[in-house]
Length: 448
Ligand SMILES: *Cc1c(COP(=O)(O)O)cnc(C)c1O
Image (cartoon, rainbow, N blue to C red; front, side):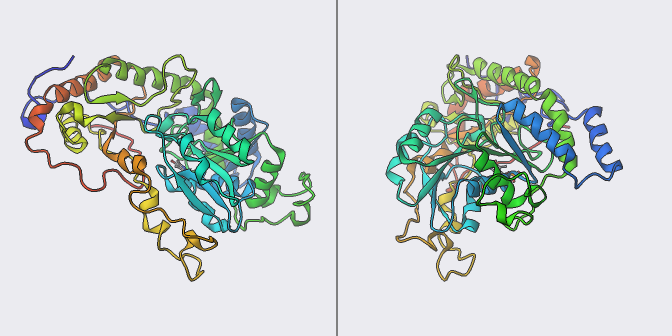
């Protein structure tokens, strides 16, 4: 139900009253993490790989993959994954435009280029119906992003990839622990790669990790940026002659303070995200049936989950609230104390000048089409679903604990704002031309 109490925006009492320090704090760091990090520092073991190798073993065991390879960033892990899939000069990868740049931008440095496809309006992940017509003889791989925790439609994407002999790279940066029909995301495609930086759901400091069941992909990833492991253990005849030096010219190993913290975080991760899942589902369940908003989550009992609910968002349906803009809607929520509720998410990458004009490496033409036979740049209007997303989504609080007394205050804020939506129409400035951001803000809110 909605409530009609006076909005805080108009002088009423704010719905969110609790003073909290833990509800939004992330990652959860205990003495065990501190001891693990200090051990690395005191032993002067920051640049080794012994702890990292342990972390990789445990991570692979958690995801049930044959191989895991840790990196100093998620960006590096995805760079290596794209290389490992054989993407090179003139090749194309099909990827969503609604994502963080590091899902795909690394392809430039390999001489390849991205081809952006639409997202499904309900999952916000790559739309299987918009992939096939973009495949050319230059397409090598599909990059899937399980966007803000939601698993992509892997069955259909894998079928398309198989039919056209393409590799599938899963960017799991938003979705460590999310399930797709019972399987962990990152383990369904040819290779999974992900960020483990502090803002993410699996948060260990700067870091990334790649997982695969394919020995050749693993070895190519090792050869690309892990020179210290590129040696006698390598079985590939193609790679062997170059052992000792990194093929990519990159040094990508993980800092061992990160891997030490990662080992501790991994022990508690499932338990912690189970609590986040309960809290977030509780929040949406309380709001079920209200006009103007819809949850972004898979159907119950589908076997699919939102993992750690990284940067959770909801859908906004302004037409059910008299045409109120999401910008004004969020302004009222923020006044109620729901300070994390901001309009939009990632801006559509395909509209950024980096994918139109930039000549980064001196090809004498834009890098995007440096090796293309025709102009594949995608301008405004080319991906209407993606371009429209920012007017129909907004951030919701990222609850870390299933404390209903606090969550209920946020529920109350939503009920108030929705119940008073008609009053907000009067001074509604509408949305600015671009709602959202190139980066999702990964706020660690500690309200004073
Ligand atoms: C954060 C992120 C990355 C990059 O990871 P870093 O660890 O920051 O380098 C890649 N893809 C997505 C979708 C991300 O959100």
